[in-house]
Amino acid sequence: MYYSIKDLERISGIKAHTLRIWEKRYDLLTPERTNTNIRTYGDDDVRKILNVKTLLDGGWKISHVGQLAQHELQAEVKKAFDTMEVGTLDYAPYINALTAAMLDINEKEFDRVFASATTRFGLKETMMKMVNPFLQNIGLMWSVSEVHPGHEHFASNLIRQKLFGAIDQLMPTAPKPGRFLLWLPEGENHEIGLLFANYWLRSQGFEVIYLGQNVPFDSLLEVAANKSADKLLTFFIANRPATEINDYLHQLITRFEAQTIFVAGEKGLLAQLQDFPNVKYLYRPEDLMQIM
Image (cartoon, rainbow, N blue to C red):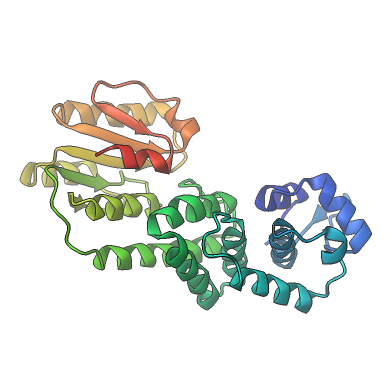
């Protein structure tokens, strides 16, 4: 996988101009160049700049970090990560560590970072403050991927496993009135946001009918006819015209006039959709907490 310097800027949050200076002054990165003399960077460069960013966030100076050999850099990052204060609200090292584990296809490290975060912050905060920004960094953002498909599938499937496990381990709570129906329309396959909604609603005592991804409209209607639901929740993630989504929502409100329909997705896409009388848009993961 090759990245431009703008990709490194987006992933690390470090300005491209600064990366060029560090590259020249500290020999920090080792780009290749195209026939037109454009820098391209590999996975090793991304891992290294994420490790550098972790130490800088921890108070290190670039003049010191730039002198570290690769094995020294990795050792210092691990030390900083393991000694992080339990009460910290800084999620950046976790996000960086998840990204590095993804690029290495290192399931053991991915699991270690995820477990450490959930132990310190709980699953809700981990999903909203760590996993969601992490997915943004790899181009998902409850959206389409811009990284290598293998990296995307590796990371997203591990997160899905964590959510399924968390749902299975939920303890019974006092039931709340109302039943939610959750699904992704046909063509929608990125399930992480919907799975988190499933976990959160169940943890709050709601009954949930979970249909998962890529559900044909007729199948949705068939389930709804047999299992009445008070509220519906879906996500629009795939890149598709707003007119197509508006048509789908119009079909929904025609069939579900008495129910509230919650629609989540990327903020820019949702902003293009029409206002419907019984449709409420969820622009951020935090908005999910307000739908009870």
